[in-house]
Image 1 (cartoon, chains in turn brown, red):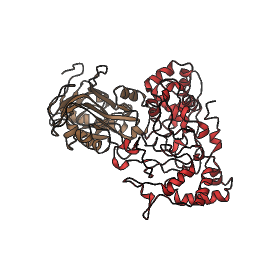
Image 2: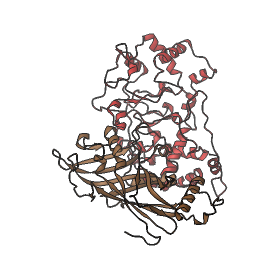
Image 3: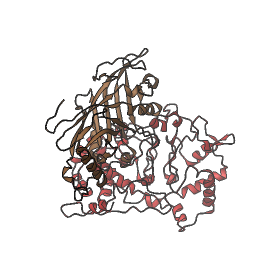
Image 4: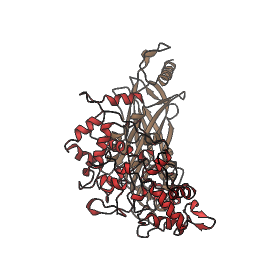
Length: 276
Length: 335
């Protein structure tokens, strides 16, 4: 029963786009209790923990990577409930930098907090990796803080002014190469080749992200850095001269990006009791 | 949109009113590409942008402003320089393009390194051989320089001296830099006649040049390899440096021909000193390669064949694209 109430409330929220609760057909508005959602990005490397600066075992391309920087932009977050209704987090607040970096001056960012999310039972998350064309076309209007933060985390390109969507750097060793530096920088190449991708990931079956004012759910998303080069397209660093910043290599990495992410589990914590 | 405009008109607590400015779009121009709703032009915003355009603090040495290499009387190019000098007399590898009609362009720089005017200034500011600065450091310098706090406060709702407002002000100024009052424009508006030579030149231009140098901007904005023999010392790959695709090797943006008579030297690397040399190149100097533009392949011959007489009248026509109103407009000058 409670589920049905939450559902109908979510629908009305979607329709009136968070306008104030002045009118309400079913008289249940008292139960609209928006809550917060935390999304944790837990990085790994082919299932093992990703430790910045430590060597990983060779990937399926025969290249063993030591990652020194794994930064990316997560954007345009949408929560989808069990009936397929979508709640789009306000676009102007929906750009985040996730960062794990060997540069100690930069604080790691591995979580996102969404506030005022309509109460509901959500079973999937959709988000973009990078900066979409609409945002790019807005230029600097309203982008000041985000641009500055992106610059601080080396997520901007100055020579081809724009955002880096992914900044994935380190060294690697293969059968023919020993400890050479590599750089994978994904970004917009042109209006036609934007390299911006979206992904939709489901929470494990039987589970849900329960949002209301009494709850403070934490969603644990795993991010497999190895999959960037292996998930669907095999991208050998050596084949691209240790640097992938555009062209075919970037398009292949962008194809892999949606496959990098998965929801591992959800903690439906009560508000005030953070856990894990 | 209306709300934005109203907000802008009453932007100050102390009763000061910033005045909205409407961009005058010439009737024969293509549509404006710059999003004026996101960054509405205001008198104070444009004025701040002009001041920043001529501000040396944007460079690491405090000496190189945008206006250093973009000189108004040469349609905001660097006269007499194949490549321009940046800080510490370091030299770049491309010829300074004009700053004009920026509100109508899709891409910026010879290789289209950015698709947004707001982002463009970041390129010269951060390039080592140009201004060799960072945006953060420029903003810090401006905060500490007399006058800027008040100018930013008068120009923007939030009044902050920050990178967003800095770039928006520069865009506002550049958006107003419209060149549309050359003899050619007066001819289009039925205000002036072309001479016989100029008319013949226009006819040949439309036949042989206008497929790339299209619209009233005299560029279709595309990236093409026009058959220049690459300079082996630079081997500048052009557009493919940005996109990473070999199919874009040696392609550069088709330049506008507005004010072309005053923007020598020509081509992305400034290799030709005169329009005669440019037309001679198209007549007999085009070099074939994998990415040569198909329009420069004609029944087995390369380039754009012209007779000497045709080249003479073409240049007579190109001279009608010089817009002295723009070149002398004190709204765009350092003052």
